[in-house]
Image: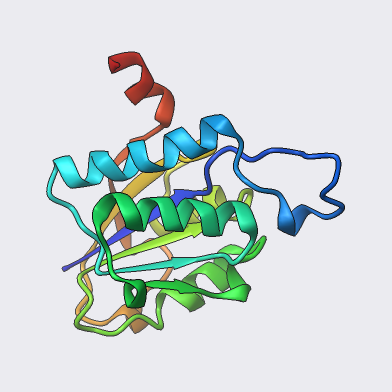
Amino acid sequence: MKTLLVMRHAKSAYPPDIADDFHRPLNKRGRMDAPRMAALLGSIGMRPQVVVSSPAVRAAETASATAAALELGAGQVLYDERLYLASPASLSRVASEAADAVTVQMVIAHNPGVEEWLGTLCGANARMPTAALAALELDLTTWMDLRKGHGRLQWLIIPRMLRMEA
């Protein structure tokens, strides 16, 4: 059994001095939401063994905040350029490369690919606002077997749900 955690990057800013989409940083809300979502994982005892993120600044900052909140080591956070604005097929390809010893993997990427990927993996028609986090249970022994319709959506949490608690 494998668990795939799918996260959309946290809310980003549109600073006037940033000329391209790739370099957009997190805004204030994004900097608060990323560790809040990681704390949720910690509170339920779910720690990814590896986090694979898009290298776009907003995704990388989300991955960094998540790793810090979960006290993950530097070698547990990987950046893969194929995840920047990736299609569901590219997202699956990257996730399928995880070592078989990994039982919980987190992928941090962008919409619309993330929403489409969830639909591909488990049939969910789920909206993934920024910093949304979904957990899929996969009946796999090897990540290479990751394919369409293979997952079961266990839960999906959006940051607003956690902000309402506070």
